[in-house]
Image: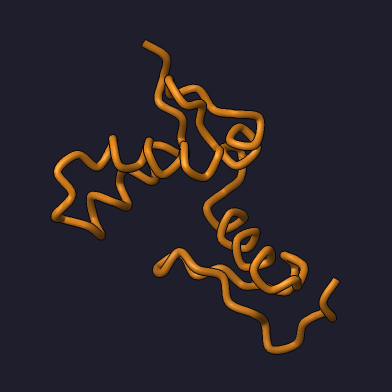
Length: 96
């Protein structure tokens, strides 16, 4: 069997830690990644977009999520590893 992608390992671990009622965290992670378009429908192979996100660090992914929601560039954010979230810097560039 092919090695589990890093993004799948990380999401599985996050589900285990943050959602103790989930009976099969790996299946939940796979379903989420498929919903996001990061994983192919009938396998654990990553799509092209999934491969790009798999190569990103957790901080880069958090900044990317925040940037897409707000319209600010990713450089306008700081990453907090404890919360896995990106927050807007106090002085930041204008929206793009």
